[in-house]
Length: 296
Image (cartoon, rainbow, N blue to C red; front, side, top):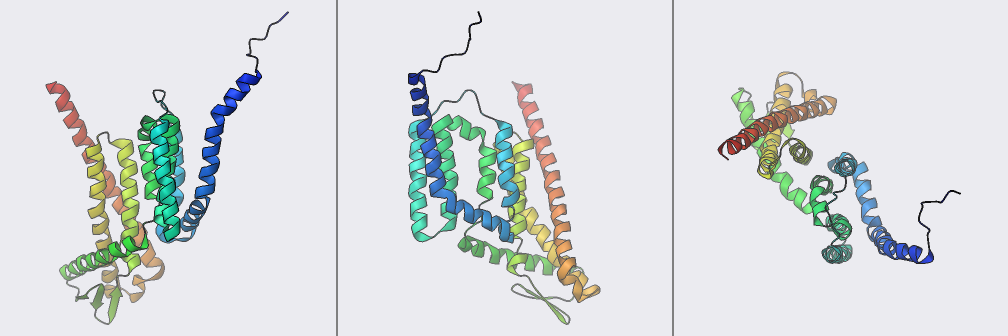
């Protein structure tokens, strides 16, 4: 007569499992109710707003990276800190809802995710998933106040650098703020041409590449910092190239498909430059680590 080795599910066992699952189920339902609207608005912006379109790539990539990294086995739940983070996220969500401030609502959603993870798995797991959480944070569009504050200085800097390059190439040019005057033509460096989109994309790429290929936080920080001047320089080259082609070839080179193609091509160049910087920083990192091991 065969005897089953499977444990018998008693009423007490079922009640124990239900008690263990109930708090997590309640937290999941509460999370959906609180953050369904902010997430829906965020997904809408990812789909319809060109300045937020990078979220369509970053959010799924973050989920895949979390799955790829997996769960640590040496973690322990930390309910009290997790509940504290969750409480702060709920308060932040409520206050942002009163002020109709989308960025804060979306940040509260990310904070609540961290709180749930700390409650269930502890801070070690949250640190283990630092790269997915960072990419999720970068997928949240900046508030309009900050975007407007950043766009104008970037427009003026791109205009100044582009005009300087045109003057270096003996193109008659006059700079008035973000307007570049050429003989019989004016180029307006608008907010869309400020380089803010390429800067956001390169910062995201810097975080991603640094997380994969660099080991030390200082090396990753150096790579992310290098993305800022690279984006600014490439955008200035784009302004110069537009003015150069408009002056020497045709005014049509400054608009439409050709103008968009210049932007995509120069972004590829910026990505290659960032890759070369990554190789250089990685080589320096390995040399320093080798030198430390040799002296140890």
